[in-house]
Length: 338
Image (cartoon, rainbow, N blue to C red):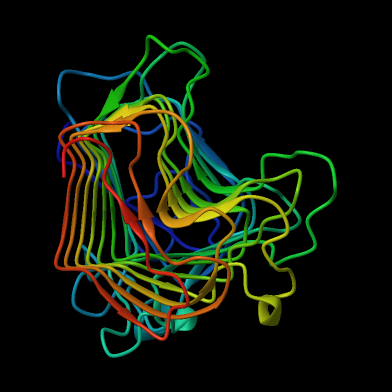
């Protein structure tokens, strides 16, 4: 019934998942119940495909168990909630209405990967979280307090999909709505957030480190190309983007936030720290980007390339109150509507 609570614990031997003791399950069941919450204890877990048929607006919540929030006390031990639940392969969301909540992080250091309740380990997989199904939108998905431990550097010369988060539905007529990425940490990959086929996506209060790019793979912290509209990118810290200290420099075209032929994005309150870019810190040299609002961002120490903001060829763009510190070429182009 909606509102039920279930318990997952690495090494458990139960089958009903109804307490932490004899009935806890070792992994998430193949079918999840709409309206239910699944608490996850510390431990190691396989990848998973979330494909449960939707039922109105009923949400399935996957939540890291902690001392303060773990459901029933039956069989609970403090050691179940002091560390991290690690998913060792790709997580795929092929339906909507899910909350994936790691519960904890170190608010004093957003780059402290061990403090996040959930960790998604790459295990040599190029993609880490995929929110899409061909020709079908996966709506209303929230992912928070989650560390994506992606592959760092070492991109091949050929083009691949090394995307920490990939939302592309491979259909220009499909737009997912209600996607929220909050209080995350992503380290590695070629694109941290590849946001395509979406409208109104939010990326907020998150940390990102060591994104890579080369001639065959355009690198981005946030990729907003073509089929994305009205995204909100706010209060994030993007660090060491395309920096050789992370294993691979910029090579080909790169932008910290790349947007081409899209509209209505709001990008504000972000910090870009120690970055290289080939095109621009925000934007791109070709295509139209209109009705963009880019303000109150801080750019610190561009180690190579430009550090500007470009929304050229578009209209209705507003670029204001941005700060550059130690950046070689902080040029601004807002198209025809600054």
